[in-house]
Image 1 (cartoon, helix red, strand yellow):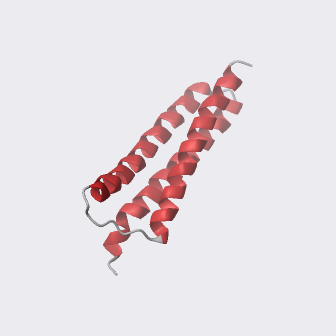
Image 2 (cartoon, rainbow, N blue to C red):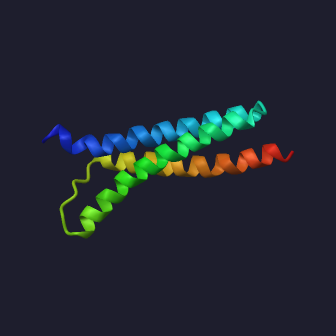
Length: 102
């Protein structure tokens, strides 16, 4: 099995993991009332999440064209990371709004 077949999956894991971490850092900044820094971190988190989503979308397009897509435990792990990054980002955005308006 070629290591290169995992490249896309590991990129999703890394990007989504970084996105989730940045979202949590943004929440910590907001708790310290450093809202500008929090917004900057959220912007980076969203960019990383979008990059991971684009990689996922490429896989979906490939499959929809009838091209085989290898699904491994690493693929599933990447999808899990992307889901968690998305949920974390959405919740942190809402939590920061609550903190701003308290």
